[in-house]
Length: 570
Image 1 (tube, helix red, strand yellow):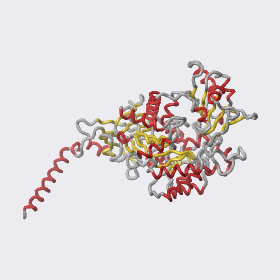
Image 2 (cartoon, rainbow, N blue to C red; image 1 turned 90 degrees about the vertical axis):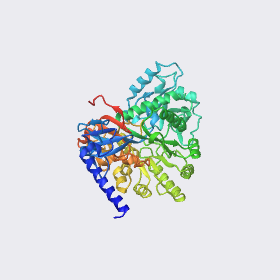
Image 3 (cartoon, rainbow, N blue to C red; image 1 turned 90 degrees about the horizontal axis):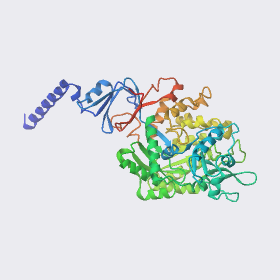
């Protein structure tokens, strides 16, 4: 035997001895010890190859093992923290697939009147006024005329009765209309002679005077006069939003642009300051508003995976129309309950085309708010045009909401690989007015998740908070049952469009991650992915469907760090 052969044989013998010694020494030496091992869980991984597990091992931000308890014990060393899950259910960290992150925090610092009776709204405004000197702006949001007996838009006179000396601005639940008082209109210089701005409308009475309701871009006539929040106050809002996210087991969010006059550049700057101090830990995929904010980012390019995969900026947000509830969604044919009216063209066709082209040329993902079938048709046409002119196989262009569509466009987005980011909770909130708006035929292709999935698309789910409550379990429940939280209508609203439990969970995890180009990083519990997960108080897959809305988070882990622990967890 030559020298090389002797060395090979000696190496093989040594390797055999080493393997034998490792096996004899027990499982703790069979793998590198992890920092934390979670055992005895009921884990839904959202991994098709291993859909169920009982244990995970974590080192740093990543999962180093997902599987059974026996295999996990190989990762237990002298310094390993071992957590007994006691049979509790574990899901991948939930991903909020469409919300307005800072806006959700701001909501907590303002007057919140979500779906409140008018008398309750007046009482809250009056209580706020009593705390602040005359002339101070009173800001709030959440009203919805559809839950009031008369279903009519309110008037400035109603606010004047309780707030004659304070300017008041209350944003409708959808975010596309505001209700203001006379003081606010006066401070903004809005009167009967003020023309409707491009992309917006001022509601007027029989004499042409403003009623106090302003839609879409007309909102800015008043909002531009509001004293903006200080940077410190905005940071406080961001941290409040984070606290809320973690309390629900939400570990990542797609933040779909800023509202009002707040710059998305400022928002991103403040986020970075909080990340640098270690105060922000939630993962944010932050979009940049079209216009000047976008142009600033075109010069610098996308920012991906900053602060340990916690902040990414690679998407530009556009608006094609408004909302169905405010009748500003752009339709192909007139509203069934307002003949001759087809909605509002928020951004002109040529301006959208130019914006999409510029974003694509600069290497950014494109995301567009489109609710009416007219707006969706326009966006699909323009996406197709831009992508034909500037081909990109894996573009992941998104349509935010995609609420009212046609059979043609449902098929087209699947073929073009356009991602429809749809919010399950919108269907159960809108069911009381949606069919009145568009009639019995068009409604068959609205909130049509089953048709969309069957066509071949995936759906990133979410709440659109602060438009809706951010609770993801309400979103999962709505997606599965097509019922509101009171269990109405019995059997579900157009139940044939419901998601399965598996699809709904994917829509809040791996599908939402795909919508952010991050499905290889998060969205499922697999070795090598981020250790983001939530422990919940009941078995999502086995409980009666009506209980899904009642699920509570017990423990939230982001990048291996426990960021929320419920007092109920012992």
